[in-house]
Amino acid sequence: MSRPRVLILGGTAEARRLADVLAAEAPHLHVTTSLAGRVANPATPAGEIRLGGFGGPEALAAWLVAHRVDVLVDATHPFAATISAHAARAAAVAGVELFALRRPGWPADPRDRRHPARSLADAAALLPVLGARRVFLTVGRQGLAAFAGSELDGTHFLVRTVDPPAPPLPRDVRVLLDRGPYTVEGETALLLGHRVDVVVTKDSGGAATAAKLTAARELGLPVVVVERPPSPEGVPEVPDVRGALARLGLSPAAADTCP
Ligand code: NAP
Image (cartoon, rainbow, N blue to C red; front, top):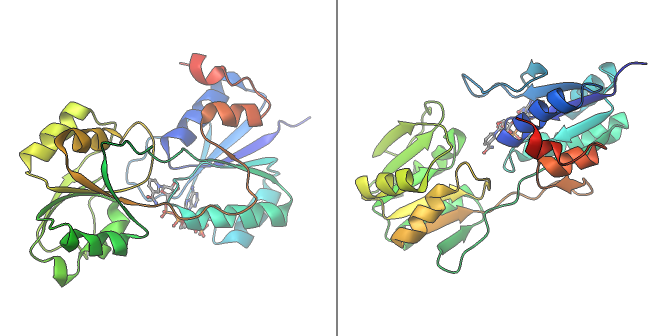
C-alpha cells in the first residue's frame, strides 16, 4: 500500500517545523512542502520540496489529484491570502482534506500603544496623524509601495526585509537586510540607535519577530498594527504544530520531543 500523502503549503517557520517533525516521527507519511520561490535563499524543510506557483486554484486542484494528495495543510503566512483562498477552492474541487496551520496574532498588552490599521494604505495614512518622523517599517518587501507616496516625503523609514526590496520605495529610506529571530535587547538597541518614533508591522504573530513589540512597549513607542485579511470560510484551523500533528492523527507531544 502506498504511503498517505501530505502537501504542506509552506513559507513559514511553522510549516518548516511541521515538515521536519513529520520526517522524523511519521515516516509512514509521504510529505512534500510547496514554496512560492519568493525568497532567494529559503530555509528548507525536511522531505520533498516543490518550488513556484501552481498557476491558480484549478491547477492546484489538478496537482493534488495527479500527486494523489490525501491531506493538504495550508501553513502559509497569515497575510498570504491568495494562496489560502486557492487552497480552499482546490481542496473542494479535488475532494482533498484541508486544514490550516495558522499562528495566532500577537496578543495586545494594556501597556501597548497600538493603532490598528485595516490595510497597508491605512497604516501609511496614520503616520502623519501620529506625527511620525522616523518609522521602523517591517511589513515585508512586497508591502513597501504603500509608503512610497509623496505625502510621506518628510518621513525617514528604516525598512527591514529578508531580501533586497524593489521600487517603489519611500523616498527617505534605509534598508536593513536581516532574518529573525530577534531579541528584545537587539530590537531595543535598533529602535534607540535609529531614533525611531513609530513602528509599523503586520499582525503576523509568532515568537521569532515578537521582540520588536516588547521593545516598542518598553520604550513607550506607538505601533501601527496592520490587521490580518480574513481566512477562507469553512477551513478548520489549528494554531500550532502540535495541533497539526493531532489533526494528522499523530501525537502532539512529538512537536516538543523531536530535535
Ligand atoms: P499570496 O499573495 O497569497 O499568493 C500569490 C501566489 O503565489 C499564489 O496565487 C500562488 O501562485 C503563489 N504561492 C504562494 N504561496 C505558495 C506556496 N507555498 N507554494 C506555491 N505557490 C505559492 O502569497 P504571498 O503573500 O506573496 O506569499 C508568498 C509566500 O511567502 C507564501 O508561501 C507565504 O507563506 C510566504 N510568506 C508570506 C508573507 C507575507 O507577509 N505575505 C510573509 C512571510 C512569508 P499560483 O496562483 O500560481 O499557484
